[in-house]
Length: 167
Image (cartoon, rainbow, N blue to C red; front, top):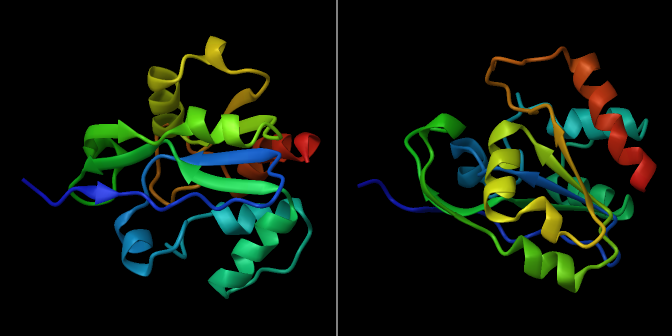
């Protein structure tokens, strides 16, 4: 059996308003110990575009940037087994304690799931009717891996702009 993968701890500003949930960091992100560490992933470019900011290369500065915006980052999966980086290869997933995080941070108004796997895992483990007041949105994956519903960069930015109304 492969080594069990563990997601990163959450990135939390003092008063988060939006929680962005990935599924599980890919191999390159795990190796770099960075959320969305694959330079081909559109995540950071989408956020810079949404806030009309120049791209930042330094990871610590990227984290400061999203915290300033009131955005928290985490993953719907806390641990799993997976060969490679594809969500389709995830086995024996165990969720993160997202309900605990939402109770600790009642300021979160939107849970934005980055892609189908994140959304499916969240929905399976945290029934939407148990959420106090947070809205849940399934947004197109920022992954560089083409999927069934891959959108253009501009299309992704347009759908991701939903988060702005909660900030």
